[in-house]
Image 1 (cartoon, rainbow, N blue to C red):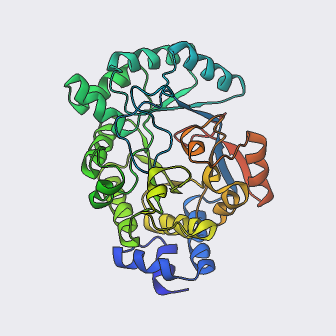
Image 2 (cartoon, rainbow, N blue to C red):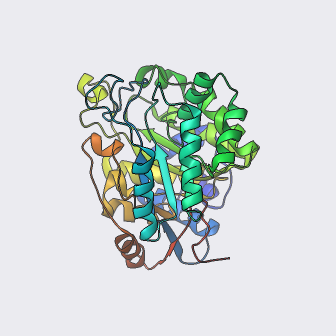
Length: 357
């Protein structure tokens, strides 16, 4: 094991150059170092999952990102918007099987006002007080602020008052504006994404962070993304977990144009997961993505630095629109964890074990 890997496994901070060098490290050695770091952060044998549902409330979106096969224009016959009753029905189904996380995300709908989201959150919080409203990525919040001519702090305060409990890390892609200009030119800048998260943390809203890689970014830009997340975490401490996943080309405009690199397949995912664990020394939890990788690679992620298998995700439409469709349930996630010799435990969005004080 190289000196950089040994130091990272012991919790020493990597420089960007050292992080970049890890892409050339032997995969097994990289995995062993990331596993050692994970075990130091999470001693004991517990590995977690959450019972949740990803509700994509609309596919109408003005961003028109080239990596997305889910969105539709405002006048499209394939566009939809769920009613509040539809959303409550989906939450009810999730709560009935012991679910605790309602992940609500959608397109940047040009007509939906802040009051609509407040009404949705309030209805969920009142009907299902044990369900965490984990909703609205930074781009959705930025769009609301523009539409209502309000500040980001004011929008977040209004949503918090209505029941918003935490914010997912969607819309991050790669936090480098060169990349964003190529794959999502109508979306917001890296600084704007980070600014929403900074303010959310200031107001006491925990958030997750994500990275979608394997398209037009360089390896150095992946490290730049991790560096920006690590720097904000150093400032605020508000990220509870990190979720990397590879771009799913499917029927996306980006794939049709042939303007993309590669994600390295399952081995590439495990490498990215391990590097993330070693580089993000101040973000406590790392999630393995069975949604994009399938069950076996998702399970292997628990040996490459991840301490969590993510959500049962009773439904999901964004990744599946690109042609990647894996399904699971709590029993399967528990078995995958148990088969590795770990003890499976259900958690909440903020990684509190369900049933614990």
